[in-house]
Length: 107
Length: 112
Image 1 (cartoon, rainbow over the protein chains, first blue to last red):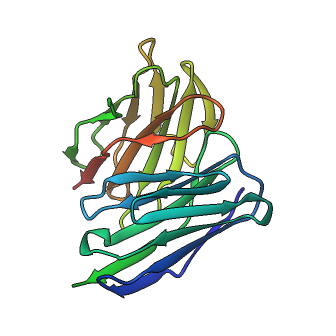
Image 2 (cartoon, each protein chain N blue to C red):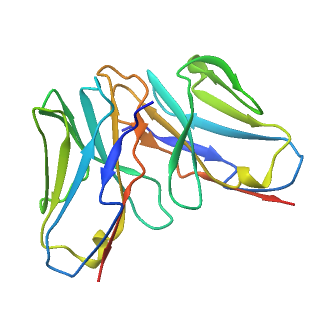
């Protein structure tokens, strides 16, 4: 099956800092999504981005499908950005998740 | 906008009991997926349905079964519950063909 690797596994930031989260995957996909899991366990859709670049406020994402990686950028981080960030990829409908990146933003 | 609705949100069961989790997809979505997320783990795919037929199967125990009904809602039935079944269970829905999947808020199952 598809392998998904996320890095770094843990990230600690001071409020206001910027960060880049990376997702590598092992095979061609037609679905790639970034999620934020909040402390209550809710999975929040951040981006559906099988290719190209998208921006939503302080967050942006880029997927280079030919090189099998995606990047999530967080700018001017806030304490509410804390949580686990998952990258999930799929060849059709089924998504395979990475292990997640745990982000802690300190005030 | 309507989201994926899961019920119940929390469930406590004893070992060897049975549990039924329900999922109501976003209107006009024809594909439903179930995922299991153990403590500190990433979500793992269990099973999916497209147009009421099973479309894919992951690491779903034989004690679990699922189906999608004519109104597209889905139910995950879990029998002979074990302590290790304690997890967050997510349902997601999408249109068929690799489009964006939207997740429900999850059902937290605790087996005691």
